[in-house]
Length: 243
Image (cartoon, rainbow, N blue to C red):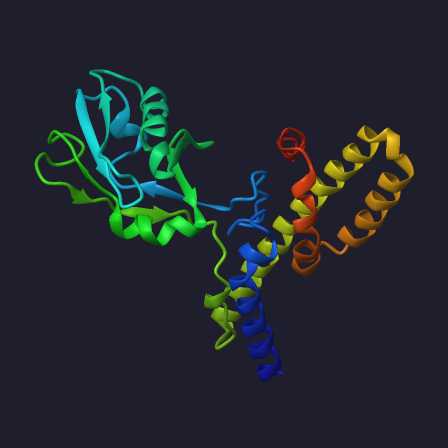
């Protein structure tokens, strides 16, 4: 039984490594659906918390990264608020593929395409004016990946504590898959009603997928995700925002 569990975990880790390619980029590392088909890594940037950005002194931050061919500078004004600063950071870092936003807790959160994450970790540097970051030569920025990302390679059953932790994470992963499946059911149902000129085909297609999605398994999602590329982005965003 122990050997069977180890084999199952190894198979899960191997399947997870192929996730981005096999789902055509629609499924990210936290089992979220990405409407653009470009799964992204979400992370914090050390030194850029809401407290650091809200109402502080004026400072110019200059970012450098391997993917951008020039220095990316943003001016944070005296007494500015964190939300405005995050909007400025989003515009400034966009050429490097980095986007910035506020999370539900009011803290800055950044994201980058999965394929760019490894490079960004080793190449992003910043210089400031001695307030949020040191002045002078650019220093590497410490990036902290958000904990919600799954990592099946770390799952195991070597002892009871590790087994409990693995079971908890697997259960959480299944809940996320079920949420995505429910969103896709709504999406497919909406698309079926929106294509009345081909209603019979759309109804059959949505019905078949609806039955398949009832299993809410990762393997099922892998099988259907590439077919979603033809569905309009605006409709995907609209429907998934309801979940």
